[in-house]
Length: 192
Image (cartoon, rainbow, N blue to C red; front, side):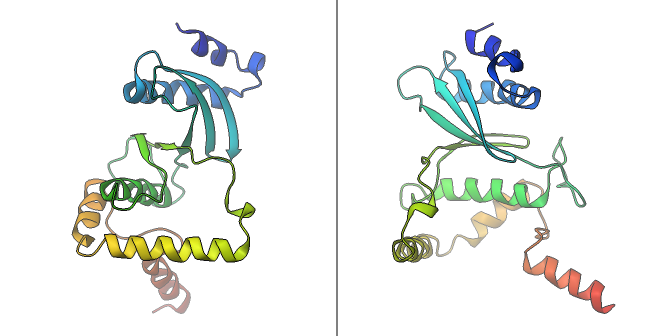
């Protein structure tokens, strides 16, 4: 057993919770498959619920950190075909990262998808700056420029996105803020 795994298996010695240690055990094979067998998880920093930053060490080309997003268990409509029921928001997000990955390098204003497994997404860490550090005008310019570049890169690719959704077992858009979900809620609320 490697040193990093031993360290993470004793969550009380490192300050990690048992769930963080279990998550690291699930992520370790993914990062090793991507960056090499000698890759180890050195640290685990929760960022917000279901999102953590992992510190890595490994061969050349291994990033210092990666971001891991964990799918929340499905509350109502689990995605069919997933061995661990995950909510539709996470399933859609996973598909969108796979779609964005097909656009690289023509459109590269997103974190790269490094690995994915049932209920886990491992992403390139873009750093800690965040949007809160941007002046509002700069942020608006970044958003507008990113949307324009995305729009210019994606003509005719609706079918590619639809194929990825189908492959992931997604049919209707069940996210809580989707047009289809609002239509369902309206029908329930008005008894239509």
